[in-house]
Length: 446
Image (cartoon, rainbow, N blue to C red; front, top):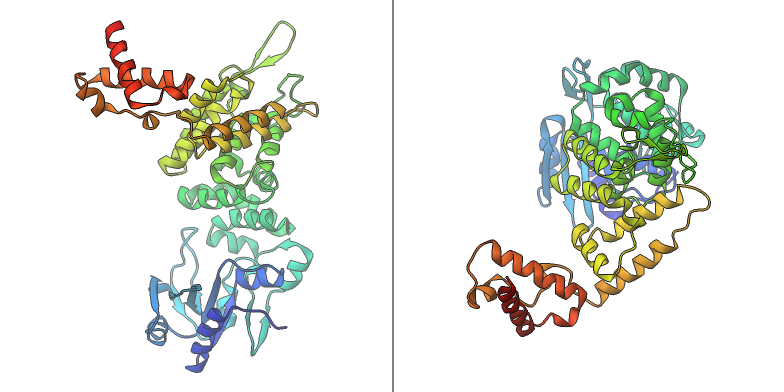
């Protein structure tokens, strides 16, 4: 077996071998090559210690990202290569870190500490594929299986339970029975893992081609109660509405699967109806309604993303998308569309449109998105024609108003908002002298 390895990676391996060390590509890069995919990055493992690695590559930029654990990055124009010294580990006491880590002299000990068989393979040109745990067979069978006893592997690091689900979702593989049972048994211990590590894996699941596959695995393993208890009330929740054929949970999964893998969109899809179980009212005809579920869902999303330690930027984007997702029922004129663009932002407006399309498609077989497609076209026209929709687009600013004799303070903002309202209706008014006259007229009226 011969793999097509990029030259910049071969250079690293050749240098190590020329100095008398062993070098293998390992882990995900081997897995991806066997699957016929191009690895996003290449990891190399070697018996060279970190100091030796730095010396061998002293003419390259090297980055120490974990020297005491044996990891050095060699940076090249074509890409970075992460090099890690063979190591073996002691027992784990806190469900995350080993009691001790020592460097090893053989690849077998290094592979034995890895999580899943499909990630425990190594390769170089001299020895070919090293597959001590039948990872290639599991790849061919579409199975996620731990290296060795699954309970031992999960007790070493409970995050591996989420990683099993993530790999299963990414590859659309089945989790082997004993591995699944051990994951379910130790699922409650995932709460001991830092929220940053949990959300990192969870977001990777959300960005998979079919995230519903992973979310159902989370549910079946009992992890939704730990990671996202806010979603649990949606499971089996009957919407009692003829416009919705699915319960809230399955509708949510459908929407997520039908959006592009953009994290704020996938998260907005996850949260867009999360407020429904808390807002159900039934009218005289027995039809269910969910007034205010968009605002409540946005608030819930904000709280969850704070818990996930997300950036304010991501949290705010998701909040806005969830809060605005129901406006597809509104009949906006051009002025209303400009206000919508202003509220959502030019960068996110088409993400909102994509979310709304998926929401409608997943409601019922008779639903149509024609009105959303028409809205999308009008928004594109507004942006392509560079029609003003925000204060920054006005051909006048606060300094101009002060020069006209207006005093600093709230009046400046009020006048600019007034001028924007006029320009939203009639873009041709966006001329400095015209706006000055309108400002003076506003003062007279006031």
